[in-house]
Image 1 (cartoon, rainbow, N blue to C red):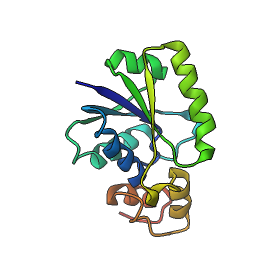
Image 2: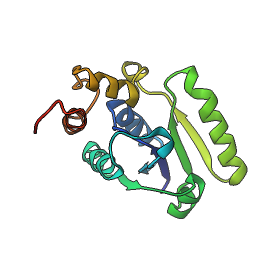
Image 3: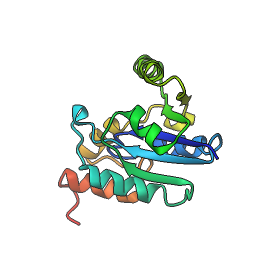
Image 4: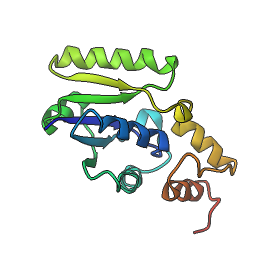
Length: 162
């Protein structure tokens, strides 16, 4: 049974992330969506909220587990017994950074492969940063986020009293 890890900050998880998960399950039997704290990115949402939203987004994917992780990715992947790391590539601008990370991970452990997947065209431009900016200015989040994530972003920006 093949297992892959899809790591990210997921601040918040978007429909683009879900699309990559769906595509990953065409290649791997099981997937771990690994939510990183990533203080370098200064996430808007706390780690616990990002994990909870990811779990909600993954409810229709029984072979996907959602877990937080706070260690070197290669160590986490090895500890979980995964064979591959999944990364989404939206545009050429993503490629250089992702390529460097994949080569570094391979240098650390040459048994791990990184698999790059492109999202559907409708999500090729979508980033969590763009969605947060949209939320900041009261834009329509429904096409990009599950309802729970949209509500959580609105609360984060004090735009939704619930």
